Amino acid sequence: MFESLSDKLKNTLRNLRGQGKLTPEHVDTALREIRMALLEADVNYKVAKDFVETVRSQAEGQEVWNGLKPHEQVVKIVYDELVNLMGGTSSRLVFTKRSPNVVMIVGLQGSGKTTSTGKISRWLRDNQERTPLLVSVDVYRPAAREQLKVVGDAVNIPVYEAKDTSDPLTLVRGALKYAAELGHDTLLIDTAGRLHIDDDLMVELEQIKAETEPVEILFVADAMTGQDAVNSAQVFHERIGITGVVLTKMDGDARGGAALSIRQVTGQPVKFVGVGEKYDAIEPFYPDRIAQRILGMGDVLTLIEEVQGKIDEKEAQEQLRKMTSNQFTLEDFRNQLGQFKKLGSMSKLMKMLPDQLTGGFQMTDEQSEVVDHQLKRTEAIIGSMTRQERNDHRVIDASRKTRIAGGSGSTIAEVNQLLRQYDQMRKMMSQINKGGLFGGLARKMAGGAASGLGGMLGGGNPLGMLGSGSAIDHSDDEPNGSVRSSLKRKKRHKKRR
Image 1 (cartoon, one colour):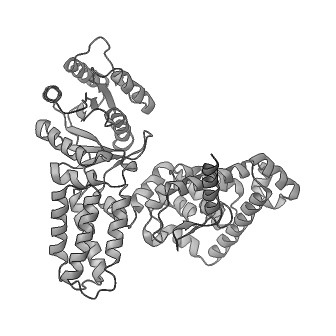
Image 2 (spheres, helix red, strand yellow):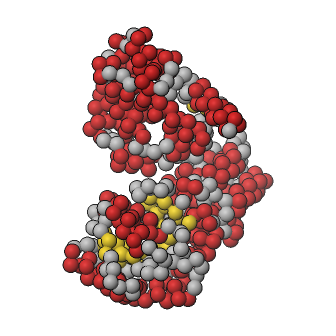
Image 3 (cartoon, helix red, strand yellow):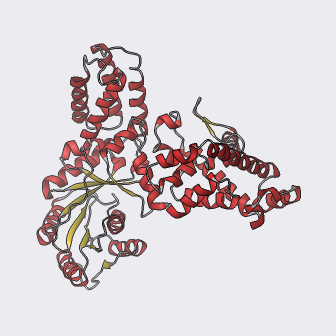
């Protein structure tokens, strides 16, 4: 997300380097480009104008202070204003001691309300220790209530059905009573939508609001619709008073105009963003982290949270111990690959790392697909080895290599590459450990589970095991060696078809 805006802002701010003082001419040039970048990202016109004027008033004529170079100062100003633009701080759902607390999910048809209802309920259970109950009052769209039941089963959250009635108010009254009797402290109501905003829809939502007295009314919008999503949120807020916004399909929105505009236009914060189709692909919206991503500062906090949530800490610590004591086997490496895959695609992980670490390289989805394919190929090669071979690679002779290559659908050259790079990695780990560096670096990572990340993105980097030259060369933003050749093979294959 925000790829287009991020590239333009970073290029604009990069052009300010080398200036001893920020003159009005420097500021004017940069702000014109920033304004165009915001408008091209489908940010609301008035929001873009106000943003630029605020940055201008703070940047114009300022000299170096607090050790910051002029361009770094502008980056700091732009960063602070981006954070303010998106709401300043993360806005969590607010609950009271009353039980059950009601959360209304509203929005237009097709925005992803039902799926988002399931995702949010799962997130509340896993992260805020809530005990949700779901109910659908969409009695108009065919099979809408059955769809929520499917979603509820997928996330293991109970759904109140009451198949004998099709009256929305009767449904919510029954769901409230059922939740109170069974001890559910949160009731999420998946409301009906329309293809367009009409008075009948709003009247029904107003009635449900009056009946249930919700603590939160979340408007769900498709981020890819840009300013249409912002305008719809404004209308819903004027009629029923939304308390927050859930933006779906953020992973497919390269512009991000809705996320940048919605707080300023409606006065209500973005609370969640959907970043994929899976039921765990939803994230709380952190304005400071999003601003960091846009400006190429990375999002290490979110990455660490991903690691802590998806990586087994004990196993990561054990792998780290084996690396530092030169006991890391191919069996351990295969296990590490399995954990690494839980974090998502390589392109997703790269976007969370600062440009200082990646050299500004942005992996495309096609490149990420090739890398992910090669990770699977590496797993297949190791999987074709016997337990003895995985635990002691020195026993693998020519005949064993032939068998392993045949069993994994690879070549003997690829098997040799894997073994050679694995051996190089072990030697490197041994040298680092002798210098006392590895343990110190690992301890500087942010906490226990992050040591697993240190192994995966550092000494035990799976990219280093993908084949010759598969590491990323940042000088020309192209993948080297086997990644490049794999891309070429794919293109030739497409041409032949």
